Image (tube, rainbow, N blue to C red; front, side):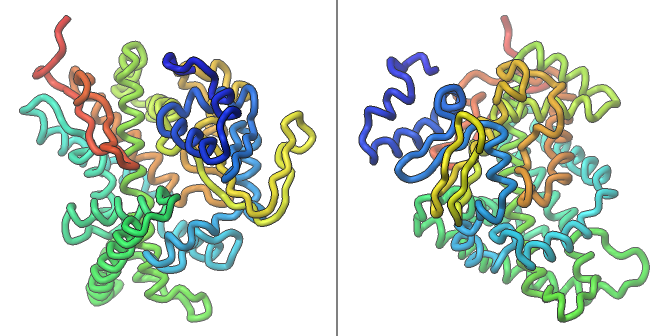
Length: 429
């Protein structure tokens, strides 16, 4: 419960009119989601507001996310389709989802992961080396975004005309597709323009790759080139338009999400001196899984997204047979609060503690069920390796606020975050 509050969240909520209820709930998600969701889990785990329904317990969140024929991703279509064309992420249990997810999984080979991890580490080291003389780095733009966007270029085969364009395309599309709940037309138009620019660029790149790819020698092993070299019969329906749509989707899904994950997991580690010391020791060890657990636990304490939304297409009873059993009417916007689920005391022992022995099957960082992130395994090496390379530097430390605090600048994604390293700028007692 926030120290500044004199009444509980639910007391304030219950005393408000319908319009104010919605505003309060959205404000608390932005400003104090952990305390708000804790109260809901304990007192009203399924909260029906006038505009949407919150689901906060782990079993209920996963129930929503695994019932794709009831809780659909259809509301994403108006935000995605005008930008990248009809896209699998906005379709449930459809041929386009089944087919194109399978095609993309085939070219994103698990065998590539060690090389992707190493590439992420090299990029992080390059960013740190550049900043080393100053002894500090503004991490969001110079490392957290820099690493995944360059992976999009090197591994996905979509380098873009320049970093500035890639950053802008990534941010514009991600903001519209996943953060534009109020349907701001300016946000939507910026994403559509970004999509048009991406398609124009990628159409030219496709022609270049097709002309260069004769199948002789050592063919390029980036994702785009693999797709270009693959012949799909007409009846599969994976033509150039579908190919480009999926390549654009790789940038959309990689840039801002990965950047935010790197920054927020690192911050959580650095905020805890004892954990920081343990993580540094693990970073110098050979067991990458042991180190990675610090990163994912840090991200549990500050996830990149507090919730995932779905639309119910039919009436459904959630948590049937329990005391919290609730009927969800058709047409309800449901917020599956994954960040809250990660603190469900029935599944997470000592949920407020920072522990690296959490079972993998309880992780919701990459979603759950039918729409688990396509890039889950690529992200699962980029994020921890970038953090590991940072912690391998001597004397990594948070700078005093406001520099040393993640700042969103009023937007949906982190925009600045400084930390120090090396011998310069080390705080003294």
